[in-house]
Image 1 (cartoon, rainbow, N blue to C red):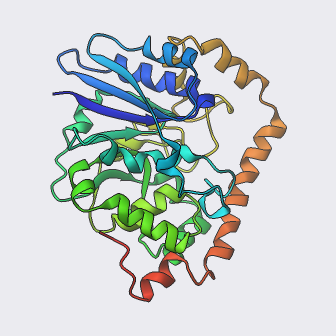
Image 2: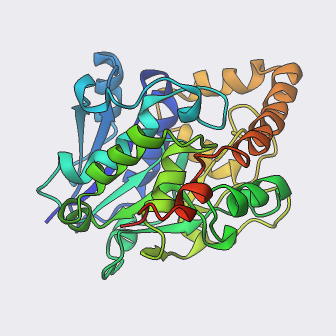
Length: 316
């Protein structure tokens, strides 16, 4: 039996994904077998080779090209912008994993801006029961009043139960058996819900009531309002505060520890050194821009809350 772990990346995210992959490999158990699959549309052969070289005898690295026809209904439009800032198709790839890989009844998905500091097999061994997936509460938004208000007013969900989609333990069999993708596509094409985090909002809504909330150590995020966790199993450099753009980010030592062992270390250090204070200010301003979306979505007659109030079936 192999433990399937999926990433979804665009070519320009390869160097960060390499750090995450290296950390996963270094903390893997040689008595287990792991298959790491990178979902992509534009990964260069050079980058494929560099990522593959980070694997070993028990961690196999593979690549899967996402067919344009598969994701064509997901359009480049403002409702699907990540953080109300830009469009990236790769955020939606994770939703298709169960259907694209029917040989797996369970799978792990993790974002590329992560480091894995414990054996990912421990996460895979989570018993999901009848839940659609396991994930961690999104700790990055708990101290952002406007984001909390958005979750209450627009998705009409409990912010304390609103999960981050950067780490998922997928009940792939349930996704397939219950038609998750067909339901997702139907909602997407019918309503084009205006979202701050599109894939994440859809997962929270469709999975409402059937999400297993996991120990927060499996999605530890830098947060200026809290102390770092003492024993993170997976660190997720969520939102705008990346250790390759900002110094003194929580958990940054973990990132640089594993970055040093990749062919991208010098490039990553140069990116940090050359990132300007003006760019950092712009990054912080993007958070305010993201939160402005709450003002428009809360009055949208087709937002999640209004559609649910009309009796539309949202959750599986």
